[in-house]
Length: 256
Ligand SMILES: Nc1ncnc2c1ncn2[C@@H]1O[C@H](COP(=O)(O)OP(=O)(O)OP(=O)(O)O)[C@@H](O)[C@H]1O
Image (cartoon, rainbow, N blue to C red):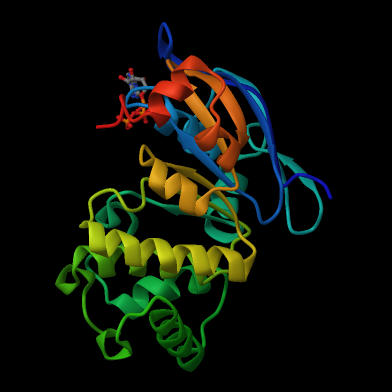
């Protein structure tokens, strides 16, 4: 099996050791990679250069598309990158307001990507909206309501539906359970875990919460001051961290 994402020596620095540098890894179809590390270690910077949102200073990101072609993310055109993000990729923001269109209904939020892909049939769009609301456990009677009338947990589930409706192969997530109450977080995590398995999604998830990492990620990369200091299977890293920094992180000394 070939990797879906091949990342080599990826670097984006804002200052000395601020950002990410020399990051290399492969991500395989259906695999969930967690990026962990303390605040300021460079997790979000890495996610944004991985997902085509900001240009790296150096290094490469190569993606194997649905047709089996390797797309070099940063030599592709802006239009190609945008198409990827709308079709084969998804991005779940920490704050659902950044990932949803707050001025249109829940159903329209879900239908948007399908419309961008050329689906125009009202009945089919509506049905996709209903199906996906049910998948993320939102009452289907809320289909015409605006997201602002939803709770934070519901908004996050709607954002997930909006991303998954177009059947992406790769999903990026930045602290998806960040701003939520603990009980709401647990529910969302369960749901996410089920969907990721069922849809065989490859995921790159940034989190500072090791419990989230443990629950979702197959593999982890531990970042510190812009570099990956340790990478490996989640259980190995959390149960038997090798690097002194990972040991501190796991012993929760560094957790907020
Ligand atoms: N646009 C920017 N301009 C200048 N410096 C930046 C920018 N974005 C990030 N940085 C700096 O790069 C470093 C890494 O930030 P980043 O947000 O990637 O870390 P993080 O691990 O995601 O932290 P957090 O968990 O707090 O979000 C920080 O020192 C930050 O101040």
